[in-house]
Structure formats: structure tokens, C-alpha cells
Length: 559
Image (cartoon, rainbow, N blue to C red):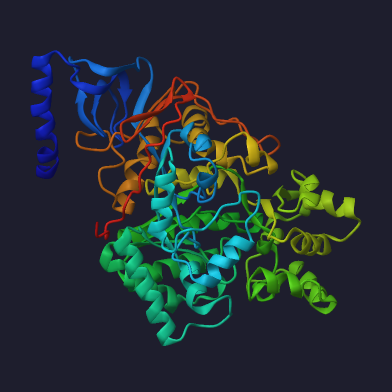
């Protein structure tokens, strides 16, 4: 509290001077709103005063602001934190962050397995070769270099990132299915330490995908032992969300316990109808670990479908060596027969989302790289197979080869009742697992998962107002102070004096998601005003064009 007081005291002196001069005392005063401060406590009707980039007063504010915002009848909350953002490329294309800003998101947290640095020459070349509709030069080498380049270009949201375990592995091991040597592992740990000192939040993994799939538990523990002394978190798309879900949770808990780090599960789910009953045991397992003193948390997106690629429908061995080798193998008739057989055969050796979906009618294509294949956007795998006159497995393999990519794919695999059960747990926050898009230009070339436009608004509209799964104050806590505390980021996630002025004004009676799987490019509605670092980015529902976003640093940053 003393440090906050020291920050505020110069402002108090300035306010006294301004009061004597007749000048407005504050830059912004948000008046008469129902304030949900992020703590989860009951709301209060109050004013919020902003000076510069920070909140200076929450309560009765008699002095005027240069900008006065009437929030009567509206909810006023901290800006929302997107715990799983894939805005890595979309913010390069359009820094306005339209689809997330219009839901109240003021911080994008990146780094699910892959991060935008550090980059070896080989990895940089691969990233350039595999770019899709969004084309961009790669002028940076480090993760912090990427972040600084975004801020320099101009972004409306704040950004933060984990360092990707996959990125570090590719830099030193490549795409090979083997363990790193002792020397390689030491270099991987050193990259993690350097990224932590530059501001990374911890280490993120995505273990169902090649080459991340090839990393075993001891390797991940070693990376986390490098990050933990800096206060880093381990966050993971676990090795299984289906057949071996419970074993995957145990692995995550083991990594946390052995490394001494906190750990979070990305987009917690039980994938596939036969696995849905496992969720009760998983939640109980996490509660037990927490009761034993481990800091284990999770985030979710509130939809019954996940989105990834056709790589999640094929065995990892065929993907060894990266996309070029994967595509080459898929053109060998003998290999194709083997892959097709494995794609249709239930197994616990790797995670098949095609089998989890149950039927190719539950597998929807969201985007293609090749113009000749974009006609299939929005169609199911079953429909495309019929149109092409080929079998399900053959169609999937052909598309990967012809598109030059893993092919954007949506899998309907999640149970609605489980979503509600997970949301009732006080340690569950929210992430979109998507880019922050605009309903215009290059973004219209694909059909993204509607979570890109609606995750946070859907929590407040469906799960708070309609279904009463959460109270409004608890939902706000899950999207603000809970993730900020879990990430150990400073001065974010609460409406308190001394905190950065990331503020959302929204109508709890009307906020809703409008995007659908059929028509995903539809903005959420009900958020009226958004401030990022004290600057209005959304005003009366319209984007101001302002780009005040900054890099938010992790707890080990050496500034």
C-alpha cells in the first residue's frame, strides 16, 4: 500500500494546484456507474477518476474532468484479460483489435506453445514460408522484440506473452522426434531465462501437436525450473483432453510440483462424448491439488467446439520434420494407407479430434491458405468429401497437401453441462483461443470460430444474465483480478487508485455475443466505452482509432 501512496501523492499535489487554477482536476471522470472493482465483492454506485494513465479515485468525485462520461445505469469494471489470445498476427494486420476491444478486452496474453520469439534462422524462415492470408516481414529475433515492434506500430490493447516451449524446442532440436541432448537442454533453459528477464510470463506448451508432442515430462520440468525463479507460470494445452485427460492433468500437476511453479490448464475441456463423464473427476483432482498447496488454475472458452487444424486428426509421427516433411509423406501411397488406418482407429497413443468429434459432420473448415480451396470454407469434412468424391481420411490428407497448411478446422467435441460445471469453479478464468479480428478486409477470407468475436460477451450474456451460472461480480473477477493475480502482473485487473486505467463501461442488460459458426464476423454488442491506459479506445460503441497499448511485463522482468 505504501508504494501506491507514493505514486498517488504527486497527483494529489497536482490536483490541489489545478483546483486553485480552475483547470479540470482529472483527465477523465466516469460518473454514476455501478462499479464492479474486480474483487468479486458487491458493486457500488461510484465515480471513477483518471489522471494520465492511472486511476486516482473511486468514490464521490466532485471535481470535473476534461472528459466526462455518464455511466448511469451501466456497469463499470476493469478491462478484461484474455488468458489465451492468438492475436499474434491479427494485431500486425490491424492494431485496433476490434473483435476483442468491442467485448472489453484490454490485455491479450499470448504464447500457447508457440511464441513470436526467440527465433532461430530456421524457425524464422519456416514462419515466413507458412504465412497465410496475413503477410508480414519478421524484423525481430526475440519475443520482446516482437512485442516492442507491435507497440511501435500501434495497438489498441495491451499485450503480454509466455515463451513457447515448442519455439524453444524447434530452435535447438528442430522438428525431430527425440529428446534434447544435455547441451541442447541447457541452451533451451538459457533461452527461457533470457525471455523471463525480458518480461515473459512463464512457459507455455501445446502437447498434442508435433513437435511439442515429442517433449517428455522431464524436459518440461527442466524448462520450468529455469522460469520458476523469476516467478514464471507453466501453462499448457495438455497432452490429452480426451482419452488420457486424467493422466494429462496428473502430468501438469507433476510439472508444477517438481519445478515449484504455478500451473494453468489452457481451455480446460473433456473432448469427445465418451470422455465427458471424466470432467467431475478432473475438477476434483484439481481441487485436491489446490488444497494440498499447489497453485493450479485453468481457463476456458464458452463454446461446445474447439478450433485448430487437421494436424489434430493425424498421428504425430507423420508430422515429424515440420510441414514440408508431413506433406511429402502424405503423397506416398503406402504412408497414406497407414495414416488413413490410424486416423479411423481409436487409440490412447495420440490425440485425435476427428475421432473425438464422432462424425465428419462435426468437423467444420474455417479457413484455407490456397485460393482454390477457399470454396470449402464453412463446409464440413463430410460435405467436402462428398463434393470431391473421396473418402474422409483421403480428403483430409489431400487438403493438407494442396493447401500448403494444416487447414483451419473446427471440431464439435465439448459438453455444455461441463462448461457450466467448470465456470462454477472459482479458479477458472476466460480465454478466446483466437485472434482479435475485424469484420472487414483480409479477415473475411476465412470463417473463424465465433469465440474470436464473442467469448467474453458470451460469459456476461449467457452464463450470467440468462443462465445464472455466475453472478456479475464473480464473472468480472474471473476476467480481471483472477488472471492478473495468477500471472503476477502489477497494477492491472482492478479498479483501484494507483492501478492503470484499463476500464470497461458496459450494459449488463444487453451485452451479448452475436457471432455464430455460420456467420462468425459479427461484433459483440453491449460494451459502450473502453479505456486502455487512460485513453478512450471505444467511445459510445465506436472505435476512436487510438492505439495506446503497451507491453505488460512478467514478474521476472529486468526493466
